[in-house]
Length: 313
Image (cartoon, rainbow, N blue to C red; front, top):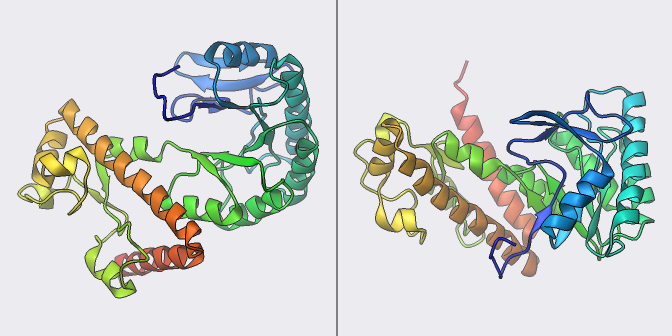
């Protein structure tokens, strides 16, 4: 569809940038989304018409995603609606579930998540969309919720999650068995003028080198800052992206501060390149069976920098 022959296209209910789930407007007919054109209600038939038109490689079923603070009654209702909509979508699907990622919801309640995961795993789907994450749960709650769900789902089928994009969140998801991530992290990072700078060869460097070579924030730098006004180094030394090969931190600082559109383009090129490199490092660590060491070193480096950033009382 988009001319990217070496990539595949996944459709999920709602654009993570501009169209967020709106649980207050959702009803038994369909799911509500806040869009730039206002609130829109989408029922299973409308949704499947979109899927038929776009023909994605994989698509997540329509889900009633609710934030962590809703009542238990509303949470149970979201499960019932999501399961009904999954059945409705499958009945309208010409491929009979061959490309379907069944939505699993349940809010912050572990038992509700388990119930929904069990029900969805009984349907004829090719994988699973873990919905409702990144909507108010704490990072501690999320770990238990992810593990509770993935422990039930078949290992041979894809697990896809949305709205988890921070490096720490990605590592948490991978540790729980998540395969695919949909996130606006790079988009919002770039809008804020931030550039990713954390080391990618985490296993290849000594732990003390990780601390010595990284920035104060460890993961990113703010290129709006005046300290970069005369910095003629690339964003990241030895980075092979177009931006780092051709431009300096000082140039990007200038572009950002005069509100030049090119700043966002160059910054997103680097951030996307670096982020994809992060995922390549994760896959390499998994292949070498060293993922836990990779995660431990990354989190420890991040923890040390956060502690250094807190002033002594």
